[in-house]
Amino acid sequence: MSDTSMPKEEGLDHSLAFLREGYEFILHRRKSFQSNIFETTLLWKKAICLGGKKGAELFYDPDKFMRAGAAPNRLVKTLFGEGAVQTLDGEQHRNRKGMFMSIMTRTQLQKLDQLIEREWEKASEQWEQYDQINLYEESQYILMRAACAWAGVPLDDEQKRTEQMRHLFESPAALGPDYWQGRTSRSGADQWMAELVKQVRNGELHPIREGALYVFSWHRDIDGELLPEKVAAVEVLNIVRPIVAISIFIAFSALALHQFPQEKGRLQKGDGSIHRFVQEVRRFYPFFPAAIAKVKKDFQWEGYQFQEGTLTLLDIYGNNHDPHLWEQPDLFQPDRFLDWDGSPFDFIPQGGGDFHMGHRCAGEWVTIQVMEVSVDYLVNRLQYKVPNQDLSYSHTSMPTMPKSQMILTDIQKITS
Image (cartoon, rainbow, N blue to C red):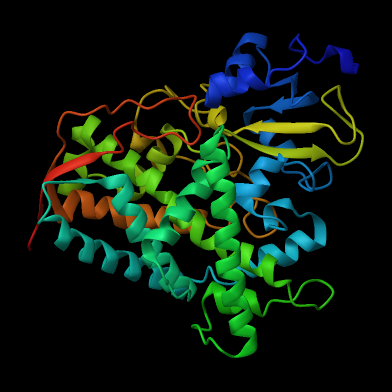
């Protein structure tokens, strides 16, 4: 089968269509072409889009795809940061990924659990005094305080730094002033963290030795050299920023508890697993639309020709809603995870593949644990009401969340 046999979307460029259709851009075309592979044009460049379990397995083959130079500049300049682990390949990537995984020990993850619980406790005591709270915003401060304490980062200006983290993950797909706010926040956050790295290396600052600030400040690359201060800073932010971004999932968790009250009742009675509920929130609601790579060298797969340098996207949202992978994917059913086989290529809300050697998000375990603690608080530690508000969410805004950002009223702590 030749390259011309690959389904191809006609037209000069489909970047605007991607922005209009958002999370469902690839899935719509997979359904239209009745194919898990097709060719389109994005940013005036040929792009191949992949879906399905086999497509994910192919995408995460390090012999066939690379990340260097694949991510659009606006992602690097806002979300990832320059020189970040997400942009590396081969030995450099394995070295840097090992740095991240070194702090994901059982002991450290348990410590993060304790920090998250402490911050929920402190925040909920204050919420009882308020008429209402914005859960999305309030959870960002909870997560920022816990993330910095876990990473050993002194938090000099809580509001300013939390807003910077929010801008980093809200701005990549934005246009106009919102995007440039993300660029400004990236610059400010990089400078802040680089100064802390410098202070650690100069002996002026002594953070906890198990935290990301200390570990990353003294990490050495494959040549035995310390990472440049700015790169070490970017990677510390790649611990803090994703933890704060879990606020999106917390808002969606509260939405699910409201829209599917039978699930909240099960969790309150202990009849449903919080872990399964969290996994279904991560599958059901949009988070990342797609992962991006480039073809490393010419190869043929199932008769289709892949040319070196071709931009390739993996349909993350679409795989999590693929009826060939999930029975009734548009229904919220946590018990589907009772018999899920744990495949790293069908359930990929934060990317797929191997944790230690591949490009699967190093913070996925953190995300699950933080969500489990947070859902437990919403279900078993707090009483609250959800007033009338706009709980719809867009499939075109990236990232997306309930439009009201989940307003809660009449908050009271449940005392045992």
